[in-house]
Length: 147
Image (cartoon, rainbow, N blue to C red):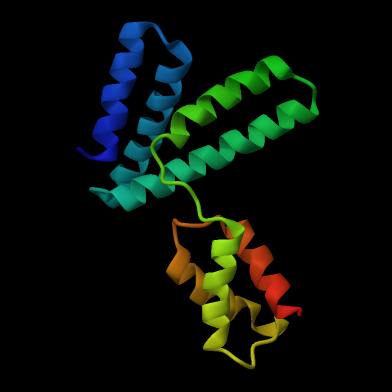
């Protein structure tokens, strides 16, 4: 069963059980997937995961803003929706795992400096696309290049 089918089935199940927040976020995720599908045609599970990660990023940003603003009621709602979507994507690599991959890339570029950050990022993200958060990769690359 594809990720989209799984999300669709879970959305219908949530609606039947009266879980409004859960069915809403799953419906929004399906709408985002459908919008990209209209532009690009049929999507692979990897592409669907990429779309879900973008939605997760939006929810994380909203959650952190509500927490800073002291709106615990809205933060709890965003957190619930975030937890719902996280079920459908694989866990991201830890910072230590990212360091290992970046170190391997840098081993092939022994003379790399901070000026080569774009090249190093490109080579690293080719290996880590969808497996690691880009901001974590950026931080690790920057740290290793400035040593």
